[in-house]
Image (cartoon, rainbow, N blue to C red; front, side, top):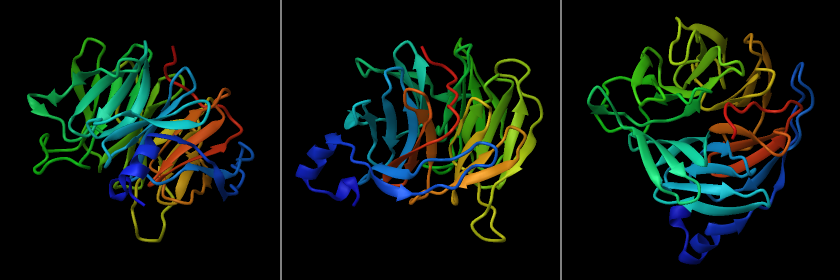
Length: 311
């Protein structure tokens, strides 16, 4: 059931609903990592979920793109509407100082004050033209932001004329880092911030780039290739998260595919619905939250997640 098709009573209840976990899929162990807990549904009934991110108080924020909304799952299990309209927010990340960073698919990178909910635009154009539809992001320790800008939800013709990924420096300057991938989507940094990972959605090869300095990358290399749903297809990934050992959790058509930092396949966490994005949460960062189409899911994992910035 899609949110926009429900009656008023159900819509109002969605604004202050409590998460009610249901049983899900028993996950197979990940090679070299260990047992994964059962994948359980926290809540369904949404339209298309994305962008989970944890804030210091333990809340998980996530987006529903078609509903133009951002929701908050509190540490106590309550789900409530946080912001609407959201600029069709997609990827989120805590940015420090009580701010939530957001890639708004309406064409800009923004920051949202968690108390006042005031929205401040950080970047809305490159070389005088608006971004296509900002998708996902990661912040580094210097306060710079790497973000992707593919085709999804972009106006025609694409404002930038090509799909790319960028870096917004702390002083506000925006640099285009690459424009040769098929729909660059998910993006993340290794725990030591010496490697930038970019996850294209329309090619099977996942990319890694050495980072000699913030906002500077060397020529990319193929880190790994995703498992495909059937032979002859070349499906890519969507979002991703990284644990403290540097393992990558990449969402795809087959589930959450897990790879080592060296690119070795370690296994796949199967999800009842096709996942779009993932983020670590919980007091020990061992709960993996998964946004998957109309549902929010979670499971426990043996290794704690890595957070790029937590203040």
